[in-house]
Length: 340
Image (cartoon, rainbow, N blue to C red; front, side, top):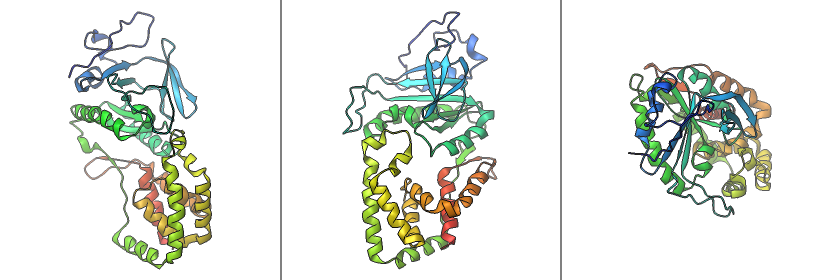
């Protein structure tokens, strides 16, 4: 693979460095690891890449994310909640254009793209905790991408294809993601691909049986009304006017959600099993309803679970167990289920 790489000669007063195979690497080798300097090896045909380092000051808070200033006074966004990286690598495929969400008018052109942030691996525990805490609050939250012996690598949903998650956009992006992860494998051999695992929590067989029985005992007319109101709210999840907002709580600010939540409050704990089932089936946004209905009385349980998840944990094989909001939510559901 030979990426089309923009070569810019760095003058003495310019602190932002664009690196390609044609630039003398001796000056940067001590600062950047080989996995960054040689990243062009992983870039598929048609993609360009730019490596950026040396920033002025620290991250400045911005709306929904942070920003940092390069030494030529350009602003670079940083995922919400994290600090100045060792380096940023931008990828873009200028040969392709992505269509924006249907129903949203825009004259702006979008290309397949990715931005990666590299942090020292010694900061991994703190970054993983931030990833877990930040994911429910805003759009430009940090996402774990990969790691090497030297770096933990972070991105964000809004820096993958400019936050466009259509099938077309994903198809353009997937080859780059696959190639990069295979590339980082080479720099991760001593700790193995299982060095970080995302915690996963499931209901036990007894809990599944209990949930099934509780759902079976709910009167059919209540189930029908639940499905009607839930379906009306779920239809709003595809509303492009909501998708483009930075906060997932926007999906809870609709007439459909208020009607659904009001109905659930009237049914009290009787309705909980249907909510738990929806979350277990993959409807992640339903956690907002679960929390809105239960947090006032039982929120201390969720707070304890989240606090416990921040403790550093490893498997018997030495793999780091990364905290997960999904795992925390399933633990909360298990505790709530025990109260019914």
